[in-house]
Image (tube, rainbow over all chains, first blue to last red; front, side):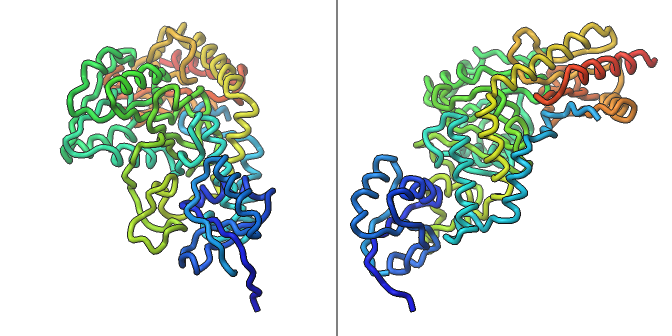
Length: 76
Length: 379
């Protein structure tokens, strides 16, 4: 079975933005996942982390000038 | 064998480039098409290559670098993606067919084309650029360096003219990327087209274009993008906008090794060695009465290229003799630069092009000069 937990998920317009995000986020916490179907049945990449990391991740992405498509709280 | 055909492709790549391609071939998934480790490894290599190229060309950010199979594809995307019927575009007689043929195609579809002439040493008159600008002029498209004579165009000067008149400026850096410093922002370049397998020392099948933020380029191809899959239209965001289909991540891994190697080694250091070789060769052959050298040699800084003819011999015969009798690889013929050959008066027999890279040696230069003396003496 897949155990669901609340997570914050950042999505991106392009794979390039996602790869830039990985560099900024990897030491802060979380990992890259396929974009969950709750957001869109897309085939893109999303950064998934524990919910309490949302602000620090937002800030890091914003400081680095990486465009974020959306930020979601999901049970995944 | 002595290889003097580096303007066609550099033969010797840094060893790290070869290993990067081999490792990629055994480990990479599809870049941007999944999140498992093989796909991520490919995506990271592609992204790192964008970062290295954005650093080399001083682009605003890595997302402004889109990859293509070669400079020809990049130039087709740039030229066909910004020009419309009724637009006027200015180019030069120094251009390669990868610039000229897309422009002729657009001319057939209603665009207006001005080709600035070159003189008998292959030079253009910069004053003619401003004089050619019309109300409907949309862009200037030109090479940074001639693949035939090796002469450079002052792209900073042309970029300033383009900016002053609100024109888009597209540069073909096929002969200069990885050899000469290029700062797209300082030089006012809107689109820079490059190949990966010449001065950048990467694998064939790699190339791309830098597109300045705010410049919209209509894609040549649309299709799979790995993102926004339910949209009926291809994503508009760079670089995905210009990269339909799976990228050549295996070879881009090689480019991703080559560009950092260049940045670490220093392109100025490599270029000075290439120019030392080129000038030694030029000084050696210009003294041979039976040899005609083409182009302008008034400035030291030029592409490491020398094109010549021997007596009234056909260039193909001379190039063949150089390889079959002396093991020296050169390129004869038209070099896909028909207007430049017309300007130089070599339209019918072409020329023999010697092009040098940092791994060539002075000993090879001496052997080539001696071989040309021998061929020139034969009659």
